[in-house]
Length: 108
Image (tube, rainbow, N blue to C red; front, side, top):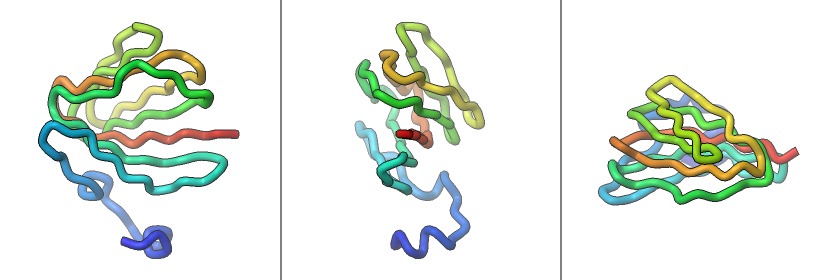
């Protein structure tokens, strides 16, 4: 799907990227200087190690269940739930089962 067509299309988040065995898959939907919207799928047992970002980010889980750690505090998010990752706070993600999420980062 081209970027031009994406702007005018109705989309189903769940079908925009697939799970891949032993992998984390990402797909950028919007990548602008002021912010990004990226979809991710995590296979069971995969994750992202602890890191920080200079901007707030919103994580919305739209399939499965995710463990999200913010400053070492654990949050379990299920389908339909979201959380804000505060700027400059260490965070990490773990997949106790397969899950898909949308990450929205606002840079201004």
